[in-house]
Length: 578
Image 1 (cartoon, rainbow, N blue to C red):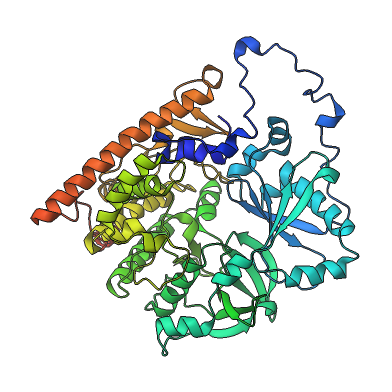
Image 2 (cartoon, rainbow, N blue to C red):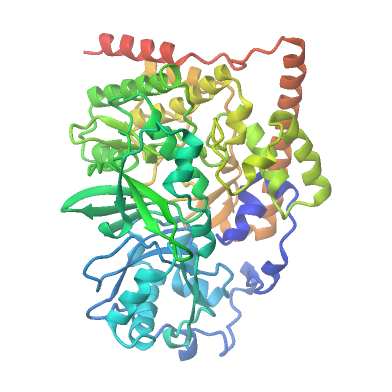
C-alpha cells in the first residue's frame, strides 16, 4: 500500500477501525495494483515512461539556484524553502505545499512516497520532489516578478506563515500553477504582549522583546524551529504556523519553570511582529540557545557505528534525564509528555538538554498504554472521517474523562493551567509519573542499544541510520538495565508494526511477501488490529472509572517504579560497573 495521507486514517491511526474515505480521495484514484500474473502486460503508450510527456525533462538544479529546500513535514506535503538571494532572510516561514493526491506516474517520478517519511536536510534535498520544487520556484521567481527586489518586497510583506501552494502538479515545471495562501487567519490569532500580560499577570517575567526583522534565517530545522542569526550570534527561533496556542503555552511554561542544568533555559527573546491588519504588534515566537551537537536521535547511532558510544556516557545521560524529569515533577509541578530522542539535545559539554515543552505528546502508540487508551478515544471522537454515530459514542466517553474537553480543542489560546493535552490532563499526578517512567524506559532502551528510535521502520519518519532491531528486543543492553527497562515498560502492548510495517516506502503486512498482498489486505489487517486495541482501551477505561468511583483504583496500575527508584537503580548499576 502506498504511503500517503490516506494511509493515516485507513491504517496508521485507530480510526482505521471505522474509517470512511473522504470524498476528496475519490478525485484521483490509486493506480490498481498489478498482480504477478499481470506483470507481463505492457503499459500503453499514453502511460509509458518511453513517452516523453511522461518524463521529467530534468532534475538538475539551476546553475545559480535562488531557493533551497531544508526539510519536509506534513507527511510529504510541506517543504521548508529558503530564498537564497535575499541579503537578510526574515523567518517568514512561507513554505511550499504540494497535494498528496497525485497520479501514480507523478508520485513515482517525484518520489513522493519517500518524501512521506524522509524529513532531514541531509537526505531530502536529494529527492526528486525537492529538486523539482527548486526548479519550479526558480521559474516562478524570475517570471512572475519584475526583478528580485520586487520579490523581496513581496516576501517581507505577506502574513507570517503564508503558503506557496503548487497546484496542478506536473512533471513539466512550466505547467505548474502557483497559488498564494496568505495566512491572515494565523496573524489574527497571534496575541499582543499586553494581552498575554493580562492572562499571565502584570509581574510575569517576560524576556527581552526584539523585532521580527532583526532575525536572519540560517536554516530551517523543523516545521516550528529555525536556526537564526541575531547580531552575529546564533539562536533557535521557535514559532508555529498553526496552533499558536501551543506556542504561548510553551512560552509561559519555559518562563516559569524552576531552572535545571538538563532542561532548556528560559527563552532569551520574545519576537514581535507587526500584523498586516491594524497596528497590532503580536508575539510571533521566541528564541532559545542553540546546541550545535544535535539530538540523541542522530548522535547515538553515529557514536555506536564508530565504536565511540561509552557506557559512562550512557549512564550519565540516563541519570541526567531521570533527574530532570523528577525535577519537573517535584519542583515545577508539571508533566512532560514529549519524551523521545528528538527532544533531547547535547550541550557543548555533551550533557543532555530537554527541549520542546508544548506538551502535545508523542505519536500515537509511542506513549504508555494508559495514555494511548485515552488518545485512541480522542482520535475517534474528533476525526471527521469517522461516522457520527461512532464519534458521538466516544465523545461521551471523553466528556467523562475530561469534562468540557471541547474548550481545549478550540484554536484560541485561553491560558489553561495544564495545557491542551487531553490524555495527560485526564490522568492523576501519580498516573502521569507512571506514564513518564514508561516513556523513559523506551528512551533508556534506545540509549543502551545505541539506536535512533524504538521502531525498526517507523511509518511517520525514516532516519539516516535506521535501527536494526525493535523494542523490546535486546542486543547490547546489560542485564541489569534490561531488567530496569522491563519494569519501566510494564503493561506494554504489541504495536501496529507487529502486523503492518513500512518497508522502504510502502506499507506492507509483516508476514507476507509484497507480491502476495494488496492494499485491501493491509487495510483489513489494520482494521482488525485497531478494533482489538480499541476494545482493550475501552475495557481498561471502564475498569479505571469503576474502581475510581469505589476508591479502589491503583494509580500506578502497572506497578512501574517511580522516577526516584529508576534513578536509584541507575546509580546502583553505575557503582557496580568497572
